[in-house]
Each structure stands twice: as structure tokens, then as C-alpha cells.
Length: 395
View 1 (cartoon, rainbow, N blue to C red):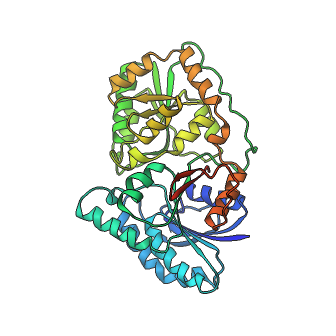
View 2 (cartoon, rainbow, N blue to C red):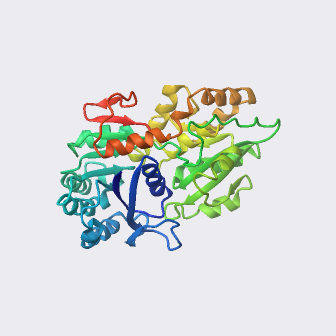
């Protein structure tokens, strides 16, 4: 069995536990350690290293540096085959634990990158220094896990951040209780005369999206409704609750449980809003969000913005809707041509795609563990090369 230490910057992020569950489903024994953002119970056993706060990247980095003193306790007597650092701030601690663990047994160091932080992007002094720090910390890394090819193209390869190969692990839906392979989800057709319902789910942090959708719903006068679920980033959207309360065509239903609530929340919407301009020109343009895969699994039509990686993904596959810009009249014009027949056609195109494109299978979980542990599976056709240094694991 492969023993993995998973170091996370946010133990309250469901994605942390999604990855840990995938590794366990792949046959690994996983110990999780990291920092908290909230104060309630976690729900699973973990080693808590301290408390940090959303949006304060440098504070989180210094907190992680102070945690290096706990490296010896985490390393124990070299019990780990693989150490995974989720995000840059966990990499110094992971390197220290890796050195201690490697004294007892061969141990691989993995750097998992799900976003490229805005402090890393651009030509200024601070981004340049941050990239230099990352290049230094990446020395000795055995593999970089990314969720979008654009992260490799726009950041790692562009700036020569790491010599290690990259592994693409897409943000597909993982439900350990689902059938494997899972059946297609058949969404019931919309009843005649009902409003078109747009769903915006997850981390709600895009001020442009909120303004656009608020204007769209007001102009539509009941023909379009917006349903919001998840966690609003109030530091970025301080007027979030005021906007929602002032618009009778917008409703916010709070947080939801992943993956249990996904069928219900996507089952009540026609269109899934995938637009995120929080880091326009950088991370927001490069990522492939969870909402892309969640919407396609559950039969909602994904809507993205032209020029982003998500928009290119949909256009390349002939799926969903792609906006030219974020003006409310542009969105209104796009939706005006969306009658019931066209909506049904868009849904049928999604259903025609193999569900393995949207859901992670247990076989992929096993392959992920093998890749992290350095065990190649060359006969597996899923190991398509992305570049001389990057390969794909759908997961």
C-alpha cells in the first residue's frame, strides 16, 4: 500500500477531502494535515497546524513557514512513500518533511497546483520575486499536478518554474458512492411557460458576474431567474446580500454538500454559469472549474466566456453556450434565441458524451496513486502526452 501525507492550505475546503478520498479509493493510506479557515468540526481526522484567513496569501505563507517546526512530528520515522503539497504555501513544510522522511525510505515530493495566485502573475517586482521563490521551492519536486493545461503553458513552462513533469488531473466529479461507471443523468424537460433558470454555484467571487446577472434578471422581468448556492466571497462582493435581497428574481440558498447535493441543485436549473473574472487575464482565463464537469454530469447547459480556457473547451467540443462579453444585453441576446427545442438539443449533445469525461472512475484513482508513487502504466491509453514534460490522468 502507498502511504501518502497530504498537506493542505485549507482543511475546510471540500476539494481537500475530495482529493484525499480519491487517493484512498486508489488504494493509498492517506494522512491529512493543514490549516483551518473555519472553526466548526471538520468531519474527518486531520492534523491541524493552525488558523489562516481567506485572501491573505502572504499571511498564510508565513503561517506555513512557522509550521516547519512541526515537520519532525509529521515525518515520524519515515512512514510515507509520497508527500503532496497542495498549493505553494505548503511546499516549504512538504520539503522539510520530505528530507526527514527520505532518510528512512525513498519518498516522492508532489506539488499540487489548482490555481495560479495573482501575486505570481505579471511583470512587476512582487510577481517576479514570488516566481523566484516558487522556482527555488520546486527544486527536488518529482511531479507537478495541475487541473488545466493552461497553467503549464502560461506559468510553469513560460517561466521555467520546475524541471519535474506535470500531470493533468481534471476537476471531474468524484462521488465514492456512485456506480462505476455511472449512468447518464437524464434531466426532465422544462415545462412550457416556465422562466429560464441560471445556476451560479461554488465560490461566488466575481463582481462582474453579479452585476451582469443582476441586470439581466431585472431586464427580463421574470423570464429569467438566477439561483445562487455556495460561499460568497464577501471581501470581494461586500454588497452581495444587498443585491440579492433587492432583486426578486435572484435567490441565494447558502452552502451545499458535495457531492450529495449536486443532483438536486443542478436539477433545478437550465444553465450553469461558469464565468469567473476574479483574476481576469490570468487564473480566471486559464482554469477549468468544477462547475464545468458538475453541470455536464447533471444535464445543465454550461455557459462560459469567449477567450477563456473554459470557453475554448466548450467551443472545441461543440458544447454549451459561449458569451462574447459580459454585458447584460449580450447575455440577453444569447438567451433570447434559446427556445425549448434548442435547449433540448444542447442537453442532448452533453448526454452524448461519455460520462467518464465528467466523472472520475476508481480506475483513474488507482492510476493517480500509481503516477504519484512513480509507477508508470505505459500500456494505459489514458497516458496521453500533453508535452515532453506533461501527461494526462483524467481524474
